[in-house]
Length: 164
Image 1 (tube, rainbow, N blue to C red):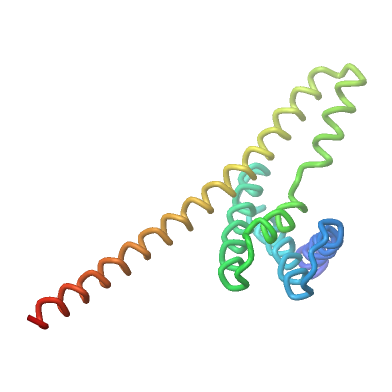
Image 2 (image 1 turned 90 degrees about the vertical axis):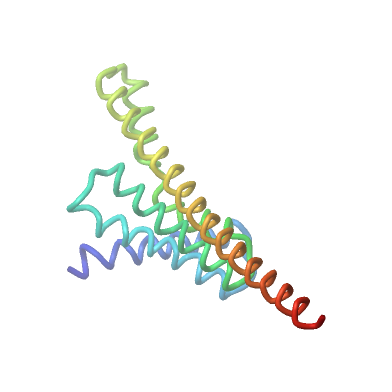
């Protein structure tokens, strides 16, 4: 259990930690929290493995990382891209890109097309997952802000009517 589930998450956390250094993230707390997003995304990827295909696993993991980055950006008052880019990096289909090119160079057309479609699907699932989660969070924030404005208008009207 530990070897199959938590050890890959530790590697994803450590690789995200290295990318924090490459991307020149300064604050130590944000470095840790950003890298934690990479581990969390990989955990969501692994947990969804028995129930979903590779594309759906990446979609679920991307939604998890995007929601995590939106929450952390609100807590730390930092742009969500700081957390999002670092958190999504362990899911990037680098191996798929490599094997796609290898099969293309070797002339193995059947495997090239199969790997190409899989790699594009995984990359698309990550992009759509991030977009969906971001849109959900923005809609929630918008409706929450609208409710606040309605309450504020009600208070202003009540004060105005009672002060006459």
